[in-house]
Length: 231
Image: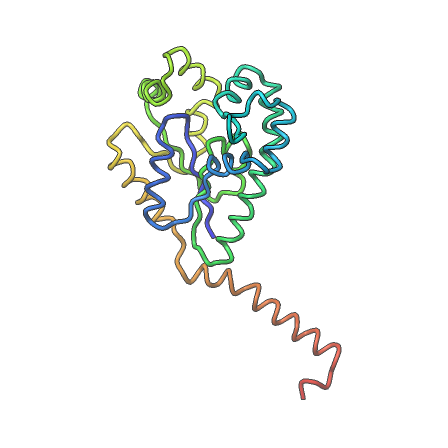
């Protein structure tokens, strides 16, 4: 199974690209979705975050974590960001690995890892190919201001806190330009991934290899333990 990493900068259009791939019925593992799931009440990560950051981050009446308030606490504090990551990242990764395994054993030829911090978290090492969605800096700032209701200074600070998009572009297999219309960008993403998708016979071969190997091992064991059984 080919694992394709999908990443970009904040407000460059990665989520739009992800939706385009889902329309091809390709499984997409979305790290943002999993990050929200592991912070639901009752989850281990939820309990750890509340333990370290206090009940002040909880919302009434259901006790869910106020992600905006938590984000404000950690944004300008590297130690708190590191603490939050230690509470969540192991559980996010565990769920992602399980989903990858499940898609593999069910015979999918390709799977998308949609991870904002793909390079920062070292997840690119699991990917055969990586797509980086990029756009002009001014476009990125404008989109972020409009989407999150931020001032220019706040938007630029959030963008500046991430790995430079130029560095991600340099490490990517493919860079998708999102300075065009949504339709053009999505069509570009679909075309690239369709070209990369392995042939069905390759997937079948990979899935059957362990079965054939196990059968051969069993036959060898039977021959060794019961030499006369084959006659």
